[in-house]
Amino acid sequence: MTTYLDPIVIVGAGHSGARAAAALRKHGWAGGVILVGEESCLPYDRPPLSKAVLLGRKTGEQCAFYAASWYAENGIDLLLAQSVDRIDRYSGRVVLAGGRDVAYHRLLLATGSSINPLAVMGAGLLGVLPLRTPQHAHAIADSLQSGRRVVVIGAGVIGLEVAAAALERGCIVTVLERAPQAMGRSVPSIVSEAVVAEHQRRGVDVRFGVEVAALDGMARVQAVHLATGEVLACDIVVYGLGVRPNVSLAAAAGLSTDNGIRADRHLRTADESIFACGDVCCYDSQRYGRAIRLENWRNAEDQADAAARNMLGQQLAFDAVPWFWSNQYDFALQVAGLPSLGVETKVEVIGHSRLFHSRDAKGVLQGVSAIGSVREIAGPIKEFRSLLRMTTSS
Ligand SMILES: Cc1cc2nc3c(=O)[nH]c(=O)nc-3n(C[C@H](O)[C@H](O)[C@H](O)COP(=O)(O)OP(=O)(O)OC[C@H]3O[C@@H](n4cnc5c(N)ncnc54)[C@H](O)[C@@H]3O)c2cc1C
Image 1 (cartoon, rainbow, N blue to C red):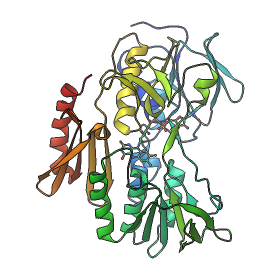
Image 2 (image 1 turned 30 degrees about the vertical axis):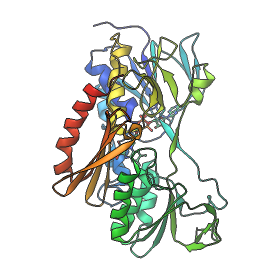
Image 3 (image 1 turned 90 degrees about the horizontal axis):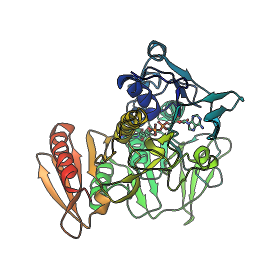
């Protein structure tokens, strides 16, 4: 086992940062590990925030990956509520906001992504919330009282999960989407139509091609004004407008950033001491023959492990088949591969569930989406992930 004088520093104590710290120990690194995060809570799992936490079945604290004692027991120096302000690549140090600087042997950038803001008048009113942190989730959960009128702006995965939780809690729910379809970046229109139909069947008012002009209220939000002049009365507004990668730290250090921090297939940046993983990492995908960036749980897990191994000297080419899931009401959506690369999508019925096979112009399967019970779809999706692993390499 090799040790070095300087520690491995991980910037971003979120999902992939915490997992990378654990992976360093698992793969034999006995030197120092410093995990720096600007949030004040222990690193946590985000998916339950838009599901179990909104439904009141879990608290944000229960979403922590590990207890505080775990970090101490594993010799991981966890610096919370501290942001890294600067990377000095020439001296191999990072500078924290308070001025403290820390030398690194290897540096992992796991800075994740930030929500796109709602840029309309009235966005600062009380009762207008995004969803990324436990604080957001608790605030939304507290507001989801039966009979309240909830307007969700953005019919992406998070927006639809919020809509489902709000309806389950007895709220009157409207979803407003500027684009012509829901989850447009992630699934083909036939899949989003099937998901939207589940919302509409239960009574959610889902509207497409809608432009929000302004929000209105005294101190709290009371109405959403649409560009058409229509006014929707509401008690709470939740917006989910997608995220953007947190690249400023890397960019200021002269690292290449283009839709994320650019990394090679080993998740290494152009600086051989610096790696990237998770939502922020835009890596060379051998499978797709271009640089891609993924924003999902599985990717945060897998890249954390691969980056940790590569920081320890392995040469593991990261080439996973993308996979994500969403839970809404009593059904799950699972997506393997990149269905957006398909030009034709065909449906297969399995019991009470549906599988959607997306093929490109050459007939090559590029992605499979499934809607239904986890019991019925988990097995087929697993098999398709294996198939895609073999068939989609470029
Ligand atoms: C509400 C919600 C529900 C989700 N549900 C699903 C789901 O059902 N399925 C799925 O596949 N995916 C889901 N995801 C996506 C998944 O959670 C993310 O892809 C994953 O969290 C990404 O991990 P990460 O480590 O890249 O980023 P994060 O977990 O966001 O961690 C990045 C951390 O870095 C910190 N940071 C940034 N800059 C600095 C700095 N300069 N100094 C110090 N710290 C810094 C940030 O504050 C943050 O804590 C969901 C996401 C959200 C928000």
